[in-house]
Amino acid sequence: MEKFTTLSGLVMPLDRANVDTDAIIPKQFLKSIRRTGFGPNLFDEWRYLDHGEPGMDNSSRTVNPDFVLNQPRYRNATILLARENFGCGSSREHAVWALLDQGFRVVIAPSFADIFFNNCFKNGVLPIALESAAVARLFQGVAETPGYTLKVDLPVQRIITPEQEVIEFAADPFRKNCLIHGLDDIGLTLQHAGAIRRYEEKRREEAPWLFNE
Figure 1: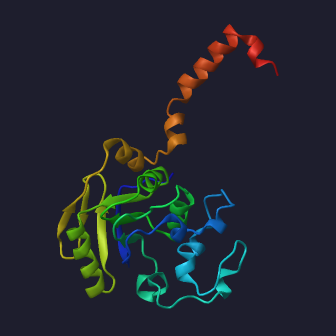
Figure 2: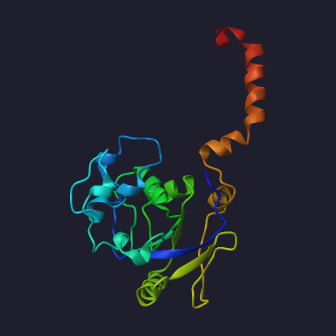
Figure 3: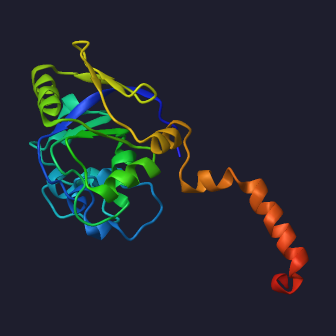
């Protein structure tokens, strides 16, 4: 998993509440478990004017010019700004994979669905929950300022706006440490590889019949 410490990035506003995971990545794209390649189908039903299916050439599809992700001013955005209860619905991890594959490393919203929130940390995406008033100010700043960027500093848990406003955010110490050091569940387990190896060697000596090859 890629580490996350600080990021200065362009903000894309998604001015919708209760965005569920089926909107983030529709169910027909869940057949693959490769973790990559989902970016072109992020928000597929809002992003395109036709119905998307796996294997389609997305470059030849008709895009919805009114959808925010298709607007040139938000090209290469790495921070997604949304409203309440982002990531609700089913527990599909593909939703985070799609966001990450599109280039988003931070999602800011007043609240998140619990499973989506956890999946973000397990895949190198930082979800930041802020008070609704703070999120509203960010939406206003994005609307008024083309090229609106934020600096997100996870170690000190601060967001710095172009106006130099400092917004502090909460972060669970364990999840924060994992994200800063790029540790997903596999990475955490591999930190104990030596102890696991010693246990297996000892167990092989104690019960060799369990290890017939």
